Amino acid sequence: MAMLTIKDVLETTQMITQNNLDVRTITMGISLRDCCHPDIKVCAAKIYDKITHKAEHLAQVGQDLEAELGVPIIHKRISVTPIALVGESCEAADYVPLAQALDKAGKAVGVNFVGGFSALVDKGYTVGDRKLVASIPEALATTDIVCSSVAVGSTKCGINMDAVAEMGRVVKATAAKTADKDALGCAKLVVFCNSVPDNPFMAGAFHGVTEPETVINVGVSGPGVVKHALEAVRGQDIGAVAETIKRTAFKITRVGQLVAQEAARRLNTQFGIIDLSLAPTPAVGDSVARILEEIGLESCGGPGTTAALALLNDAVKKGGLMASSYVGGLSGAFIPVSEDEGMIAAVEKGTLSIEKLEAMTCVCSVGLDMIAIPGDTTAATISAIIADEAAIGMINNKTTAVRVIPVPGKGVGDKAEFGGLLGYAPILPVKTVKPDMFINRGGRIPAPVRSLTN
Image 1 (cartoon, rainbow, N blue to C red):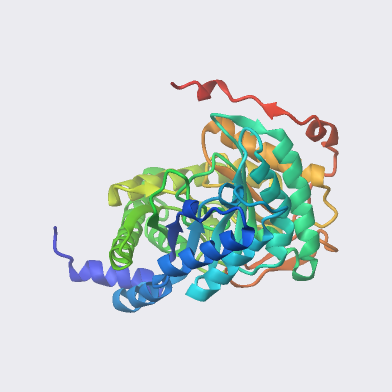
Image 2 (image 1 turned 90 degrees about the vertical axis):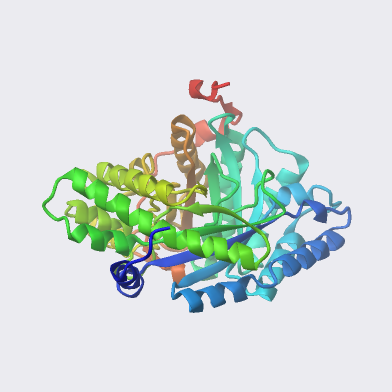
């Protein structure tokens, strides 16, 4: 292996100290398939015991690596087997006690979030799936760090429109139950198309059924690093922009690879994947929107935004792929409104709308993320937003998701405050023409022609 030069060391130090490079999360995936039991209290106890045993040292290892390597590690998280699969063995009306066991276990081991209060209903529901989905509003209202996701479609299966309709109602119910916190529960709920089993990011992380007993997946973040690098090529052509992003993504990913491999070794488990996603924060200098503006846009959301984002996303993937043999998760550029200072500014200027954000999701990682909308938005309208985003994912064979937050009592011109990494968001207007007849049809949107790949 080539020796590091002083220039390499100084460059990485600057990326960390001045440009907000960090390891966003070390996420331990834990299988709970052996925690099934007819008695939900026994099942909950088994879940608590397994998580507290397997993840006992996760937070400490994260802190140790942060101190030894000098790389900020912002979150330590846990993802678990979709609880609908585990809870189906229980003779219980709902799975809220299992969510509370996840919350208690996560707090006991000192992690920031636990993901996996989830159901996979791409094609239809089982009894356990129905109970899980019905439990979501109460589960998210009575826990602090539990995150929930529901997969409602895929390129292989099409879109389960019964589930899409139901999730509109679930989002509204979750908002109502957490109305005193600006519908914070909805910030912990994601609806997916083409969900992935090794995602380290919340709120959509779960430990897929093809995953090992335990695994370490890492998400690295460096929007500020990419923007700083692009400042050196102002006025140069698009090829220079792509090359600069690619080289920068390589360096960012190498940092993540080092942390992931060492964390897995110390926790006596295996390294899973590096997620290449550029995940912003509300901090100034840590924004994906500002990268797009550095590429040459006056404001994120204006004409050219989708093309600039496509360029960014592709170059990030190419650079990251060269830096790690095990790339997975979502891997792209996130565009969460409340978690990105530049996105918030673009909304406040009036250049960024929910329709433009939807167009941007065609070429970036995930989808409509952390978007606050008026509290009087109907369940059917939310379902229709989910259906639109799922259709983009299904047709383009990519992961898309919706994390919208209808804030009770608030409308356009107001702001929703979530705190921490979740930030704050101006309320975006949503068109009020009714999609109810479409949503009420139910059934399934068939899988597209491109699903026939066997």
